[in-house]
Length: 134
Image (cartoon, rainbow, N blue to C red; front, side):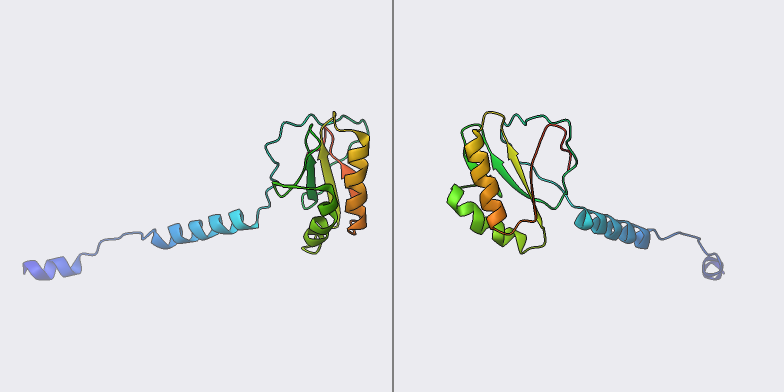
């Protein structure tokens, strides 16, 4: 008799394993589809401008530090190499280039880098300012 009574009693449980699986899949989906803008850890004092607008998040970023060194993808490059590096990065889908520069960089160095980016085929080349948030 005892055995018969245990079979007839049913426990009601909620299995949350599928719920946890769905939550993890959604978490992975949102992490993968989110685009992150990664700025280099250079000590750069950006110039200010009253006509500043937000830069596109997919823009190719070229950094010029206060010593005049040029960086693309956190790798130092010579000015004459900027054109080929930017051309390669533009093939990956972006049309815009954003030059992040220090206020102490000579105008000649900035013009050289912007010129090389335009020769690489960039449609829009901009200079990042303090108000740039993209």
